Image 1 (tube, rainbow, N blue to C red):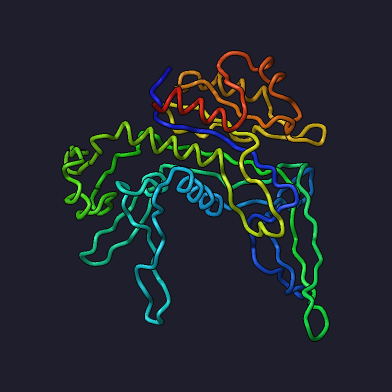
Image 2: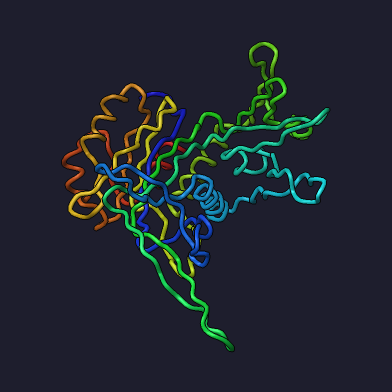
Length: 340
């Protein structure tokens, strides 16, 4: 097995009768209709409306869930500069990956002006949008009224969808606990370098730049990666939960450690018999093609009764190199076997 530099995977969420990410009010004459995010996709020669959840939205669900599940202090997003009109023109988190795991995992940015430092850490956790499965996505409209004490009822409507949302991700595991200050782009501010100098190992980068690594970086990497995976397993969030409640914890979760940063588990979900399905032949091909990059077995978590093919059948068809259990159990097993 290779070095575990990345943790890559995919997830599938049951979004039956849900409204998880809004796009505002409908255009045209229908100003009382709230619509979800959708995009046009070419399916069988037709432009079909496909629901999706933006990466920004579900990453926020994950940040909040991981903070809650692990007891991490949130790195609050706040305004750091106002325009001449008094409105917020710049925002930033705490910009502190040492004290706030959220900043280490999801990155941050503050652009400096003049002598002010530019602080930027690209997110080690990369994601796709959550996209509705082809042939298993449909939208409907809920017509409702607000009944007033005086006057006629006020009509309004909400467009919602029934679908299964797929996404993929990659965590650059090897970057956790390591911060590079390269020219004008610094991952650690000068004040943090000074404050935590006893906790950091300093080394040269490209002869003229600096790299700072936490002295307990190996433990930090394992703890924070395990916390992120726990957040994925218990994922919760989404818009309009009072009226269109949905459990967004993954019904399918796939994880694998890799030496390379390839998010290989994409386009592996489809439909069969009116239910979601995994293309097992594609999974076998991925393992065969990336056998020199895989640092762990491929862990597949399946909620019983959800897929067209159940775990027992998948186990027979996939063979060695795979671990199959429930979504939360494979998070536990991956953490126990590779993040201790």
